[in-house]
Image 1: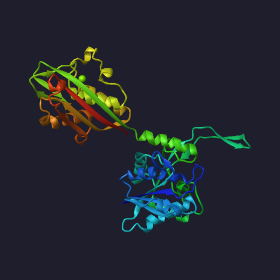
Image 2: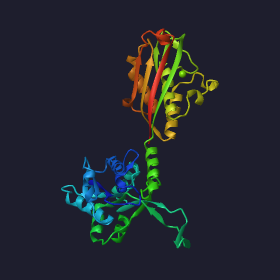
Image 3: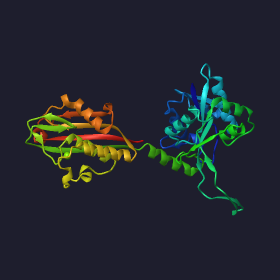
Image 4: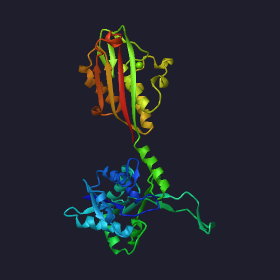
Length: 382
Ligand code: MG
C-alpha cells in the first residue's frame, strides 16, 4: 500500500514580495521549499513525495530519496492534476492508495500534523479529510472603504493543507473537473465526495504577504529550540564506608559529605538540565535550609528537573557526566550508573554517558579531599 504526497510549488506568487517566487526565498537559514519538503520527509509513512515545479524551476530542486519532481500547469488545479497523473503513470505494480496535497507556502506544517491527517484517511474513517480553523473574527462586506454589510461567521472555516484523499477518488474528481479551484476540497466536493473537517493549527500559516516571512521564521525558530545546559558540583570527603555516584552505591573507605546523599554526579547533571531551561539550580528548587530535603535521595532532584523539562515542552536528547576523582575507580560502575540515570530520567542508555578522569594528583581532587563532577545535557523542543 503506497502513500504519496504532492507539494504544489509551481506558483509565481509575487504578493509576498521579493525578486523570486516565495517558495525559493530564504527563510530561517534555508529556502521556504526546503522547510516544506523536510516536514514531509520526516513522515516515514509517506512513500513518495512529488514536487510540482514551474518548468523554469526544474533544476532548482534535484530529485532525492523519496522526492520526485514533475512539471506544473497554468493553474493550481492543473498542477495538482499533473502530480496525480505523474503518480498514476509511474505507479507500477504498487499503485498509490492515499494522497496528501499540500501548498509549498505552508512551510511551518509539523510532521505530527501531517501524520495525524494521514491517519484519518488510512484508517478508512473518511474518503477525504482536511484541516481548518473556525473563523473567529467578525466578518464584514465592504465597498468604497465603507462597511456595506456583515456576515454571520457561524459555520465558516479557514481551510488549510495538507488535504488527504483516497487516491483513486481525487484522481477521478480532477479528471472530470473543469477550470481552476481554490483547493482540492473544492474539486472533491464538486465530484460529490464528503470531506471531513479536522482541527487546523494556527502555526500552519501560508506565506502570502511580506509580513508572513517574519511570522514563519519565528514559528520555525521556536520549533527548533535546542538548549544546552552544563552543571558543576563538588562534595568533600568525610567519614563513611561508601559513596553514591550517579545513583550507584560504591564501597569506599570514606563517604561524601553533603546535605542530601551527596551524589555529586547526579547533582551536576540535575543542574545541567535546570541550566538548559534557564531555571536556576538545585538550591533554588530544594533549598538546603529546608529540613525536608536533609538526606533526600538525589533522584528526587533529577526527576524534578526532567519533569520541568517535559512540562516546558522539551525532551532530553542526551546527557554526559564526567566525574573527577583519584578513587574510587569509576570504570567498573559506569554501566550501572548509566542504567540508574536511564531509569530515573527515561532517557535511553545510548544517549547517556558517564565517564571519569583523575586530576593527575593535582588540586583538591588530586589530594582526595573530595570529588568534583561536571555534566552537560541537550534539550530539544518537542
Ligand atoms: Mg551537590
